[in-house]
Length: 294
Image 1 (cartoon, rainbow, N blue to C red):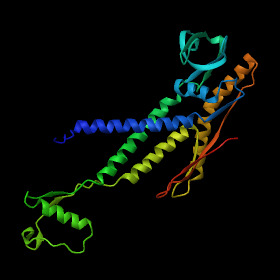
Image 2 (cartoon, rainbow, N blue to C red; image 1 turned 120 degrees about the vertical axis):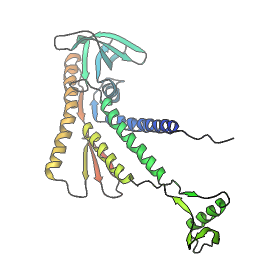
Image 3 (spheres, rainbow, N blue to C red; image 1 turned 90 degrees about the vertical axis):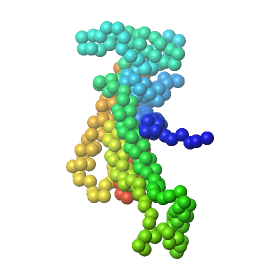
Image 4 (tube, rainbow, N blue to C red; image 1 turned 180 degrees about the horizontal axis):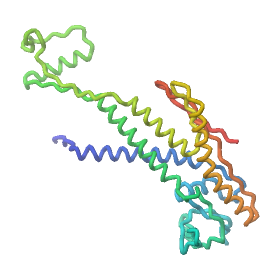
């Protein structure tokens, strides 16, 4: 059975599927990191930090209240009904696994991921799409390094050319050819090199910068030393950006804790973990993640 020749359209769809797979790998990796940026303490029985943070990560807001049968719960919520004069919802829809309930805003406390109620996942998708595109391009460039030479020959000389090529790449010190392959003392073999330029190193550097931007957005300190020492002003600017990004999320979570404690007589608290990325961007270096919690 003849082997089907791939069309340009076939190759395009294969590359698209590869990028989608890489995207899923990246997004799940960074979702796990994002879910561990803040730690909630003294939560009611059955409720964990990851429950609250997952709702904020994917939905941008959650609602904490006391259910008549389930006790204290905190679930993703969406705006419902009329808005007040400031554009804030007066009622919401709370959703869980096999669970949906309408609640008035005064029946609990709305927890926001940030002042604009934007899910972290939106930004993760943006950066992870870029990372997937870079990784897919790296894979393509790697394959291109193995593209063979193309030899123009007759059917009669095909076996001879294959044997000659095999001997060349097996490292034989001397190769003997028929005089019919010589013209004026030179091999009469036409070949075309399909070798693509090697750009993997440049793509890895670009990938590194994208990942650094993403980690900074998450509020993770990327103390990466370049080949030259970082200027102090550059380091300070990076630290200020990280601190700002962390405080945006922490401020909303602390506000919610205060309201929950005052309303329900609980003692919830939340803090931002101190996570650092250390290492170097030198030839062949790999940077390592280290997480330290207070």
